[in-house]
Length: 285
Image (cartoon, rainbow, N blue to C red; front, side, top):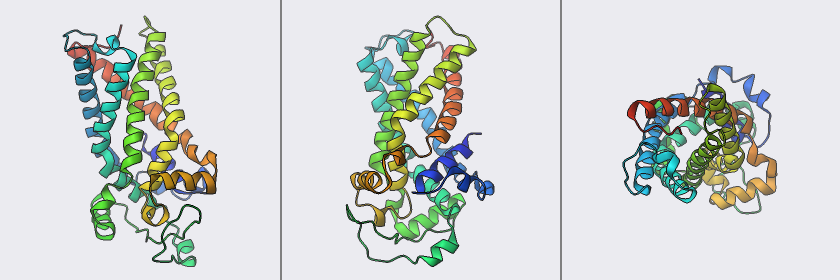
Protein backbone atom coordinates (compact mmCIF):
# COMPACT_ATOMS: atom_id res chain seq x y z
CA UNK A 1 0.00 0.00 0.00
CA UNK A 2 2.75 2.50 0.92
CA UNK A 3 5.66 0.99 -0.99
CA UNK A 4 5.57 3.36 -4.02
CA UNK A 5 6.42 6.18 -1.59
CA UNK A 6 9.38 4.14 -0.32
CA UNK A 7 10.53 3.53 -3.90
CA UNK A 8 10.37 7.23 -4.78
CA UNK A 9 12.04 8.27 -1.51
CA UNK A 10 14.94 5.87 -2.01
CA UNK A 11 15.24 6.83 -5.68
CA UNK A 12 15.59 10.51 -4.85
CA UNK A 13 18.15 9.77 -2.14
CA UNK A 14 20.29 7.70 -4.51
CA UNK A 15 20.38 10.43 -7.17
CA UNK A 16 22.44 13.54 -6.35
CA UNK A 17 20.43 15.44 -8.96
CA UNK A 18 16.98 15.13 -10.44
CA UNK A 19 13.40 15.67 -9.42
CA UNK A 20 10.63 13.33 -8.36
CA UNK A 21 8.98 13.74 -11.78
CA UNK A 22 12.09 12.41 -13.51
CA UNK A 23 11.71 9.24 -11.43
CA UNK A 24 7.93 8.99 -11.51
CA UNK A 25 7.28 9.21 -15.26
CA UNK A 26 9.68 6.57 -16.66
CA UNK A 27 9.61 4.20 -13.71
CA UNK A 28 5.90 3.52 -13.15
CA UNK A 29 6.27 -0.19 -13.89
CA UNK A 30 9.03 -0.48 -11.28
CA UNK A 31 7.15 1.05 -8.33
CA UNK A 32 7.09 -2.25 -6.44
CA UNK A 33 10.67 -3.33 -7.11
CA UNK A 34 12.18 -4.24 -3.74
CA UNK A 35 8.77 -4.60 -2.09
CA UNK A 36 9.32 -8.29 -1.34
CA UNK A 37 12.47 -7.60 0.69
CA UNK A 38 10.83 -4.75 2.59
CA UNK A 39 7.73 -6.84 3.38
CA UNK A 40 9.86 -9.58 4.90
CA UNK A 41 11.73 -7.01 6.96
CA UNK A 42 8.59 -5.12 8.00
CA UNK A 43 6.77 -8.25 9.18
CA UNK A 44 9.61 -9.36 11.44
CA UNK A 45 10.53 -5.82 12.50
CA UNK A 46 7.02 -4.90 13.62
CA UNK A 47 6.64 -8.05 15.72
CA UNK A 48 10.11 -7.59 17.20
CA UNK A 49 9.54 -3.88 17.85
CA UNK A 50 6.35 -4.17 19.88
CA UNK A 51 7.33 -7.32 21.78
CA UNK A 52 10.73 -5.85 22.68
CA UNK A 53 9.29 -2.45 23.59
CA UNK A 54 6.53 -3.90 25.74
CA UNK A 55 8.95 -6.22 27.56
CA UNK A 56 11.36 -3.34 28.18
CA UNK A 57 8.54 -1.13 29.45
CA UNK A 58 7.54 -3.90 31.85
CA UNK A 59 11.14 -4.37 33.05
CA UNK A 60 11.80 -0.64 33.46
CA UNK A 61 8.55 -0.41 35.39
CA UNK A 62 10.12 -2.72 38.02
CA UNK A 63 8.24 -5.75 36.63
CA UNK A 64 5.02 -4.51 38.22
CA UNK A 65 2.03 -6.26 36.68
CA UNK A 66 -0.42 -3.61 35.58
CA UNK A 67 -2.29 -2.61 32.45
CA UNK A 68 -0.58 0.75 32.05
CA UNK A 69 3.13 0.08 31.53
CA UNK A 70 3.29 2.28 28.45
CA UNK A 71 1.78 5.38 30.06
CA UNK A 72 3.45 5.05 33.47
CA UNK A 73 7.02 5.18 32.18
CA UNK A 74 8.93 8.39 32.83
CA UNK A 75 10.65 10.26 30.00
CA UNK A 76 14.19 8.85 30.55
CA UNK A 77 12.93 5.26 30.88
CA UNK A 78 10.78 5.70 27.77
CA UNK A 79 13.85 6.89 25.87
CA UNK A 80 15.89 3.91 27.10
CA UNK A 81 13.16 1.49 26.02
CA UNK A 82 12.94 3.12 22.60
CA UNK A 83 16.71 3.13 22.12
CA UNK A 84 17.18 -0.54 23.01
CA UNK A 85 14.24 -1.48 20.81
CA UNK A 86 15.79 0.46 17.93
CA UNK A 87 19.09 -1.39 18.27
CA UNK A 88 17.35 -4.78 18.27
CA UNK A 89 15.25 -4.11 15.18
CA UNK A 90 18.08 -2.43 13.25
CA UNK A 91 20.24 -5.55 13.49
CA UNK A 92 17.34 -7.54 12.07
CA UNK A 93 16.53 -5.31 9.08
CA UNK A 94 20.02 -4.41 7.77
CA UNK A 95 20.31 -7.31 5.25
CA UNK A 96 16.78 -6.67 3.95
CA UNK A 97 17.43 -2.93 3.61
CA UNK A 98 20.54 -3.66 1.56
CA UNK A 99 18.61 -6.00 -0.73
CA UNK A 100 15.83 -3.44 -1.18
CA UNK A 101 18.25 -0.63 -1.98
CA UNK A 102 20.12 -2.75 -4.51
CA UNK A 103 16.87 -3.70 -6.25
CA UNK A 104 15.68 -0.10 -6.44
CA UNK A 105 19.03 1.21 -7.65
CA UNK A 106 19.22 -1.42 -10.39
CA UNK A 107 15.68 -0.58 -11.52
CA UNK A 108 16.67 3.06 -12.00
CA UNK A 109 19.82 2.48 -14.07
CA UNK A 110 20.03 4.50 -17.26
CA UNK A 111 22.28 2.29 -19.36
CA UNK A 112 22.65 4.82 -22.15
CA UNK A 113 24.26 7.28 -19.74
CA UNK A 114 26.22 4.49 -18.08
CA UNK A 115 27.84 3.48 -21.39
CA UNK A 116 28.90 7.05 -22.16
CA UNK A 117 30.74 7.40 -18.83
CA UNK A 118 32.79 4.28 -18.36
CA UNK A 119 33.89 3.91 -14.73
CA UNK A 120 37.51 3.93 -13.65
CA UNK A 121 38.71 1.01 -11.58
CA UNK A 122 41.10 1.12 -8.66
CA UNK A 123 40.13 4.67 -7.64
CA UNK A 124 39.96 5.16 -3.90
CA UNK A 125 37.52 7.66 -2.36
CA UNK A 126 38.94 10.73 -0.65
CA UNK A 127 37.48 13.39 1.60
CA UNK A 128 37.85 16.28 -0.84
CA UNK A 129 37.93 14.95 -4.39
CA UNK A 130 34.90 13.17 -5.88
CA UNK A 131 35.64 9.84 -7.52
CA UNK A 132 34.04 8.23 -10.54
CA UNK A 133 31.74 5.37 -9.66
CA UNK A 134 33.67 2.16 -10.16
CA UNK A 135 31.17 -0.50 -9.16
CA UNK A 136 28.94 -2.00 -11.82
CA UNK A 137 25.26 -1.43 -11.12
CA UNK A 138 23.64 -4.71 -12.00
CA UNK A 139 20.19 -5.06 -13.52
CA UNK A 140 18.45 -7.31 -10.98
CA UNK A 141 14.90 -6.63 -9.84
CA UNK A 142 13.81 -9.92 -8.25
CA UNK A 143 14.55 -11.06 -4.71
CA UNK A 144 16.62 -14.24 -5.09
CA UNK A 145 18.57 -13.13 -8.20
CA UNK A 146 19.41 -9.93 -6.29
CA UNK A 147 20.71 -11.88 -3.30
CA UNK A 148 22.83 -14.02 -5.65
CA UNK A 149 24.14 -10.95 -7.50
CA UNK A 150 25.04 -9.16 -4.27
CA UNK A 151 26.97 -12.14 -2.94
CA UNK A 152 28.75 -12.74 -6.25
CA UNK A 153 29.84 -9.13 -6.79
CA UNK A 154 30.39 -7.86 -3.23
CA UNK A 155 30.47 -10.88 -0.95
CA UNK A 156 28.82 -11.13 2.45
CA UNK A 157 29.74 -7.50 3.17
CA UNK A 158 27.02 -6.49 0.69
CA UNK A 159 24.39 -7.50 3.26
CA UNK A 160 25.82 -5.43 6.11
CA UNK A 161 26.65 -2.18 4.29
CA UNK A 162 25.36 0.88 6.07
CA UNK A 163 25.21 -0.83 9.46
CA UNK A 164 26.28 2.25 11.43
CA UNK A 165 23.76 4.74 9.97
CA UNK A 166 21.02 2.10 10.05
CA UNK A 167 21.53 1.49 13.76
CA UNK A 168 21.47 5.23 14.46
CA UNK A 169 18.41 5.68 12.26
CA UNK A 170 16.47 2.88 13.92
CA UNK A 171 17.41 4.10 17.39
CA UNK A 172 16.25 7.59 16.44
CA UNK A 173 13.14 6.22 14.68
CA UNK A 174 11.97 4.13 17.60
CA UNK A 175 12.96 6.59 20.32
CA UNK A 176 11.35 9.58 18.60
CA UNK A 177 8.31 7.64 17.39
CA UNK A 178 7.31 6.22 20.75
CA UNK A 179 8.32 9.35 22.68
CA UNK A 180 6.46 11.67 20.33
CA UNK A 181 3.46 9.32 20.16
CA UNK A 182 3.23 9.20 23.95
CA UNK A 183 3.68 12.97 24.27
CA UNK A 184 0.95 13.76 21.73
CA UNK A 185 -1.38 11.18 23.31
CA UNK A 186 -0.96 12.87 26.67
CA UNK A 187 -1.70 16.27 25.13
CA UNK A 188 -4.96 14.80 23.84
CA UNK A 189 -5.60 12.82 27.03
CA UNK A 190 -9.19 11.85 27.49
CA UNK A 191 -9.95 11.92 23.76
CA UNK A 192 -10.05 8.45 22.23
CA UNK A 193 -11.92 9.37 19.05
CA UNK A 194 -10.68 8.81 15.51
CA UNK A 195 -9.79 12.49 15.04
CA UNK A 196 -7.39 12.49 17.99
CA UNK A 197 -5.76 9.28 16.73
CA UNK A 198 -5.30 10.84 13.27
CA UNK A 199 -3.80 14.03 14.73
CA UNK A 200 -1.48 12.02 16.96
CA UNK A 201 -0.34 9.85 14.05
CA UNK A 202 0.32 12.77 11.70
CA UNK A 203 2.13 14.81 14.33
CA UNK A 204 4.28 11.82 15.27
CA UNK A 205 5.12 11.10 11.63
CA UNK A 206 6.06 14.71 10.90
CA UNK A 207 8.32 14.87 13.96
CA UNK A 208 9.95 11.56 13.05
CA UNK A 209 10.70 12.49 9.42
CA UNK A 210 11.90 16.00 10.22
CA UNK A 211 14.41 14.75 12.78
CA UNK A 212 15.68 11.53 11.16
CA UNK A 213 15.67 12.20 7.40
CA UNK A 214 19.39 13.15 7.23
CA UNK A 215 20.35 9.81 8.79
CA UNK A 216 18.04 8.02 6.35
CA UNK A 217 19.72 9.70 3.37
CA UNK A 218 23.19 8.70 4.59
CA UNK A 219 21.96 5.16 5.23
CA UNK A 220 20.64 4.84 1.68
CA UNK A 221 23.87 6.15 0.15
CA UNK A 222 25.99 3.76 2.23
CA UNK A 223 23.86 0.83 1.04
CA UNK A 224 24.20 1.66 -2.66
CA UNK A 225 26.01 -0.73 -4.97
CA UNK A 226 28.89 1.72 -5.44
CA UNK A 227 29.21 2.97 -1.86
CA UNK A 228 32.62 1.38 -1.32
CA UNK A 229 34.11 3.25 -4.26
CA UNK A 230 32.39 6.53 -3.41
CA UNK A 231 32.81 6.85 0.34
CA UNK A 232 35.51 5.93 2.84
CA UNK A 233 33.03 5.59 5.72
CA UNK A 234 29.81 7.06 7.12
CA UNK A 235 31.46 10.32 8.21
CA UNK A 236 33.01 10.70 4.78
CA UNK A 237 29.59 10.17 3.20
CA UNK A 238 28.05 12.89 5.38
CA UNK A 239 30.91 15.27 4.60
CA UNK A 240 30.77 14.64 0.86
CA UNK A 241 27.01 15.14 0.70
CA UNK A 242 27.29 18.41 2.62
CA UNK A 243 30.23 19.81 0.62
CA UNK A 244 29.33 18.60 -2.87
CA UNK A 245 25.53 18.60 -2.82
CA UNK A 246 24.49 21.01 -0.07
CA UNK A 247 22.55 20.80 3.18
CA UNK A 248 19.18 20.45 1.45
CA UNK A 249 20.24 17.02 0.12
CA UNK A 250 19.93 15.59 3.62
CA UNK A 251 16.16 16.05 3.34
CA UNK A 252 15.72 14.64 -0.17
CA UNK A 253 12.69 12.37 -0.39
CA UNK A 254 11.25 13.65 2.90
CA UNK A 255 7.80 14.30 1.42
CA UNK A 256 7.47 10.73 0.16
CA UNK A 257 8.84 9.37 3.44
CA UNK A 258 6.31 11.44 5.38
CA UNK A 259 3.51 9.99 3.25
CA UNK A 260 4.79 6.48 3.82
CA UNK A 261 5.43 6.90 7.55
CA UNK A 262 2.14 8.72 8.06
CA UNK A 263 0.06 5.95 6.52
CA UNK A 264 2.03 2.94 7.78
CA UNK A 265 2.62 4.49 11.21
CA UNK A 266 -1.06 5.30 11.60
CA UNK A 267 -2.07 1.77 10.66
CA UNK A 268 0.61 0.27 12.90
CA UNK A 269 -0.40 2.21 15.99
CA UNK A 270 -4.11 1.64 15.29
CA UNK A 271 -3.48 -2.11 15.23
CA UNK A 272 -1.26 -1.79 18.30
CA UNK A 273 -4.07 -0.05 20.22
CA UNK A 274 -6.61 -2.71 19.28
CA UNK A 275 -4.28 -5.59 20.12
CA UNK A 276 -3.40 -3.87 23.40
CA UNK A 277 -7.08 -3.72 24.29
CA UNK A 278 -7.62 -7.36 23.42
CA UNK A 279 -4.60 -8.49 25.44
CA UNK A 280 -5.49 -6.35 28.41
CA UNK A 281 -2.53 -3.96 28.49
CA UNK A 282 -4.00 -0.96 26.74
CA UNK A 283 -1.84 2.14 26.59
CA UNK A 284 -4.92 4.35 26.62
CA UNK A 285 -5.50 6.48 29.64
